[in-house]
Image 1 (tube, rainbow, N blue to C red):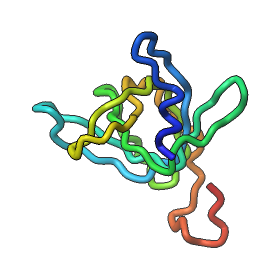
Image 2 (image 1 turned 120 degrees about the horizontal axis):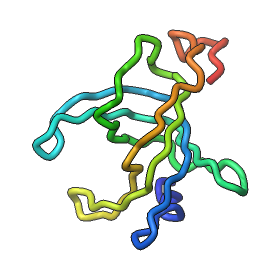
Image 3 (image 1 turned 90 degrees about the horizontal axis):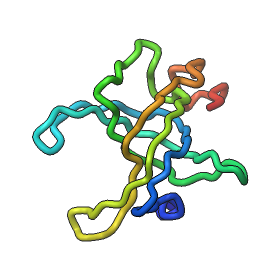
Image 4 (image 1 turned 30 degrees about the vertical axis):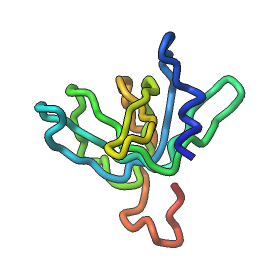
Length: 123
């Protein structure tokens, strides 16, 4: 499913798209000798002129250094952001795609229940 991102990838003319999804986890760590902030996004959707398109069930994105985690940001929070689809090689040599140069990170909806498995959970 992640290869849907291939349709948004252009090496010669990179274009910024608008995406949204549900935040699953935050991670802070080392990435190529620098400190980095990562976020796991579930059910990533791209906004296109033809409508919304589900791109992948999960995706790790590298957050900008200006990103500050808010106290109301927790698992299940509906988030939006813009970014450029980039291609990279995995350790096993396979080609994969991710969303880089993330900007305009916004929290769309925070009114999610603490327990996402509860029957009243609507995300």
